Length: 329
Image (cartoon, rainbow, N blue to C red; front, side, top):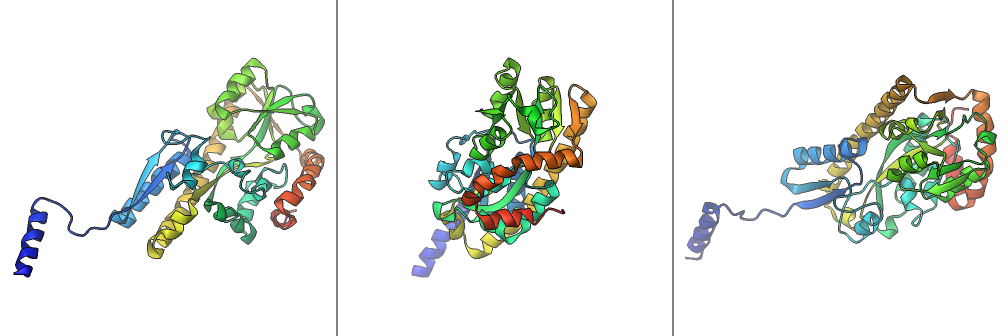
């Protein structure tokens, strides 16, 4: 009798299209603050696509671009509160949680992007991904956005050329110290406000990867761009620690494999975009592109070395040593 009742009930559920015992999918809300047609934006969509292909109904990814869910000011707290499960903020956003990531902002520490990539593969750099785990911020991967160049209203060939200029920066004690070291001042402004500030003349210089310079047409108000490659602009893909560890091991390892694949694509995409953006700026001819000689770059590095020493205690001498060993010379 009981068997008959159960069979009848199951048949009824199937007839009206309801799942019998399907497990609820793990929902991952991926929020970011940029457009979808950027390396980060395309990376988020690729992650969603690969998860759907490989994990089926086990995991559902929802992507929220352009600050449609959370913005720069509140996204980290939203992650810690469990309101969102994936973010990719720039490294400067983590200053309140760890000082060690300031190593990526140190001026002229790395020779070039290849050196940055070598460092990111080292064990010490991998440790930095987990440096905020006890604060509910779990690092999963580095997403690169290119090396930074200096732009200004005057030609910057030697450190003394920047004296007296005011540069737009992201909030960062290292970046403040970087420009103070060469006699320049700084203004902390949102990236979206940079072009207007340069047009008004309230700031006379900035630091950006080629893609930012081209996309915002900063060459229309910055007649000189010096190819310094003095620092890297990076994002960290992060999740909530408790959430990520709670994912069943088999599913979590599949997600981490997808993240590794997506991260490679994002970084490759960013490199290609920066290469094309540089070509675009050269072709436009609005700004003079200044390439430093090895001797000139060495002069900048020596001028900035005191900044490394100032932040060594905060970052850690071991982290600084590991970063310096990746340079070719």
